[in-house]
Image (cartoon, rainbow, N blue to C red; front, side, top):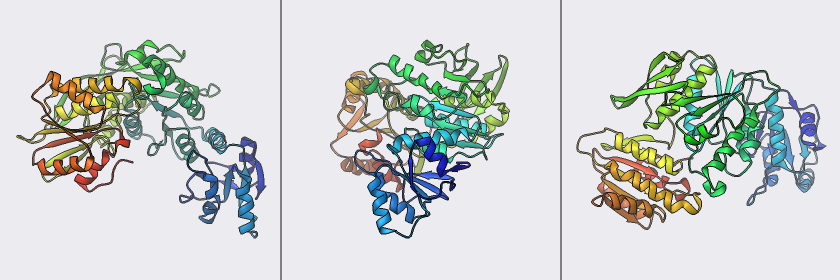
Length: 476
């Protein structure tokens, strides 16, 4: 945050200053009393199971200079225990969630750097990272950290932004109706990238058409008082994004594989185990791009990254070189080699589209002659009434891929088993009642040359498989 005083926050949030100096400048915001930065404001967020107000005193003891609370009794208890302290600012607000969002909007307006917003059903985190990587060829880039892409994470991200950067890349998620439009309205983005309209969160939206319309609310982040041009960068291979491309009235460009895409990939091939493609742009120009990350779908993500880089004037040859150095991150098609076998950890989360993409990676990968391809799969959550059908569709997609062995645990994933056996009845599939038995059996059968792919929704606990096999921590 830049030049934001206690007085500014009180005014912005319609709060009441219970004690402390109005002119105190604050430079960081935290909701974790254990993670207190310099000149920090602690915000006590109240949830269904935890009242963050209760940790205000701990935050102050750990160095916070101010605390924003919604329960005056917290302040009264603090005064009773610390009668000598009159320097810590305590701000009382009606709702700390609303107050931190208002504070974030104010903080963002004081850092007028351009920003890219990224959303989509699948691939938004990887696309965010690849855009940041491509832009970093010529710019100092601030990006969303971890998975801070929701109603709380986005405000914390914006409060951490400073004018030491040339540009920001912000990931914007969508879990419930209205969330994307709300958090986007805080951001002052001037470019929005929508990766695709998949099946994630259909439990809450019903149809892909509804979900697609909701994705376009990312444009509520466009600050129309800012003269910078506004642009939508859309996946041209997604039929829903094509269908609703004119929904907002803002200009757009497509990236993808079809002829009318302004940024297009062609001639995808594998060289030395890496994907290589020709990137076509500005009608007649082309550039060879090499990727170090697994997955054919990352060609599409790279195409989006190069489109964003070009929009901001980054030399595309330098951007492509930067992308070649991108190695991905934890639990998203992350490679682990051990004892002569290869594990592909894709346990961050799961949707039908991402599971299909991961199984395609397992099919495409060339590792060692004589090794088997093994998939460990579990349930995909939050798919609503059509969950069984989506799991079946994953199985139907996987059946012709020639995967040697499946190990499955879960309920809905058995629909994938049914589809695989209908189309490929000789495929070996083992079903387990618990992860401990699955892990024990897997350890016993793995041998040098094997390639193992692990995928399910994170809350199934599937990350324990990679933890046990590699000795590493699970997905965050």
